[in-house]
Amino acid sequence: MVQPNDPPRVAPIGGARVSSSTPQGEGPGNGAPLAAGRERSVAALPPVVTDGIHAATAWPGKSIVIHLPNERELTAANWGDGGAAAYGSGPVDYVAIPDAGGGVDIRMVRKSFISPSDFSLGVRVPDGTHLRQAGQAVVVETDASPGKPPAIIGAFSIPEARDGAGNAIAVSPSIGTSYLYQQSSLDLNVGQVGLLNFPVTISVAYRVTTSAPPIAQGDPGPKRPPVADARCVSGPTEFRSGDNPSGAADFTSSCGRLAACMSAVPARTSALTCENTFMADLSSACVSAFGHDGPDYEACLSAANGHTRWAKENMLPGGAIPTARN
Image 1 (cartoon, rainbow, N blue to C red):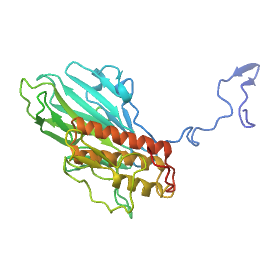
Image 2 (cartoon, rainbow, N blue to C red; image 1 turned 90 degrees about the horizontal axis):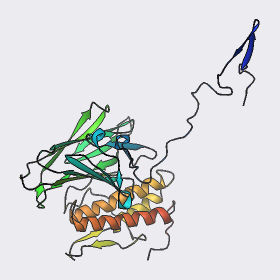
Image 3 (cartoon, rainbow, N blue to C red; image 1 turned 90 degrees about the vertical axis):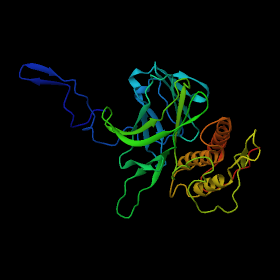
């Protein structure tokens, strides 16, 4: 709409008429943004991988962007079940699998002995945050400020690798810098592999979490206060292995922490952040019970995704407990 102080589009100057294409009714361009940042429910996988994988964090409204190694040489996405995307190249293929909690599993497949053994994932973190190595894991953490200690808002799991024969291969993670994208990087160095044992699959997962992930199978993860009267309304309270009935991932504490988190919405957090960290909590239980890979881990992770999707569709802020899922 034309404003009183806008210059006319046609102005007479002497005997000439000068036309202007200057937009009318617009301010100087320093007003409120057209669209404020919004929270992510699931990670956004791009058709063209150079756009980066946009994943959520436990800081409401803030996201991280993950760039795959040598992304300019990769093909466009080949879409699979569950929104998974495969990006191919001659020496290495990459598969990204989004979870229900705003995180993503990334698998890198070395095809032969001439494939690179070092991988560098570019990681663009929000302003006011940084990467920190926590043992063999790497966490995304807010910067410390007076009266406000740093807080974890996301984490990359302990990377694992297995060769074509199923043997575990050592992977050494470290934090580096990426000159190409002016950002941090998660650098992975893969150990020696037998000449006849290719392909090799390297796996790393990013989760929306407020604590460091468990190291390996049998590790209970970070100690947390017990949750009284915890129960799961989103599904079974545990996942048991089909081949080993004694192996089980207990989801009860995770469900209790979700209920406690939802009771603090909106005063201290957001519902979506509670639900996203719920997925990370459940997947940590899967890692503690079954490790980072294998059919039991995959089935447990599928169950965790089911719990999280149900919670997002049915649970309400304020601590109200809906009817239990059948």
